[in-house]
Length: 425
Image (tube, rainbow, N blue to C red; front, top):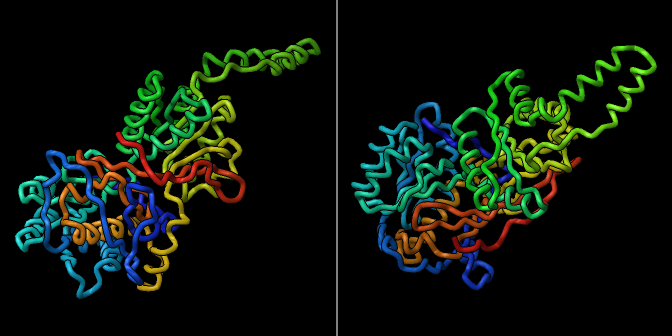
């Protein structure tokens, strides 16, 4: 079972989903509801008419099994958009967190006439549900951030590794850091990051990035950083000569050691490094190894995933990571949703709640704007949700407008604001 490799903190949850008009005007809201009132559909394409024009909204979530607490959060968020008595109504069905359970729940909801599917949570469940939804002519707004599930009629609404990498690489390239490298965990998430880096390197006209994968132990991280830095060619000989001169314990030897220490080690053959670590301990170990192998700012721009938004304060204590950048939603967009969720449930919205809220709001908006068809859902200017601008494309891909933050002493700062419009593919 593949679950999104991150569940973001509530500080990243955003405000109400709204249409971004083609003219760039402010979104329209119904009085007092916090819900958008109109939508300009996308241009006609061969798949534009796919999807139902009416029906209730099927919410597929795990309400039993180990993922049940996550499922309840998703339900809570969606109910803010579909309170009791709303039309269309929210049809909530338990997947048990398994592909088989998701298939059973989807069939039951579709048999009841539901017009769009929100969820399921994991990539495995989504892959199982997709052909059933396709056969029924129903679109799917899944909660996973695994872009492998994307296809016409199926959109992954989680912030994908590709979206994270694309945004920070763009910002790094603007400052001249275009030679990419990756230091990533030996996991599916790490490999997804590498695929995204390879794509961005091609866009920049640069060679495929150098990559080093690391395991969980200290030694593995050390080996990965040393290998990626090409330390044995760049600096190991100089360090050995310096040590040998110092070990002579003579005035001539000490003088030679001082001269050798003043020599500059050649920079690595990359100037932008994407670090895929998502926990504080691993980041701290990497931050110790990077300067030891002479991989440091400002020669090298450090970059990382969205989860760094939860770690930025701790990272600021590591000199090697100060100035590192990561892409994430602007937390300023979170106030409305956070307040609404907290008032309703007595606690701040955790983790993945924002994705369910955005999916529900988009479904309700579509219901009042022509139905749950691809023609409606792929409005070319997209929608502004809790995680910023989101554009659904007919091929199932999703473009996002994320802000880019820089790790700094104290609180991280925004170095590139979230865009209010996205260019055409």
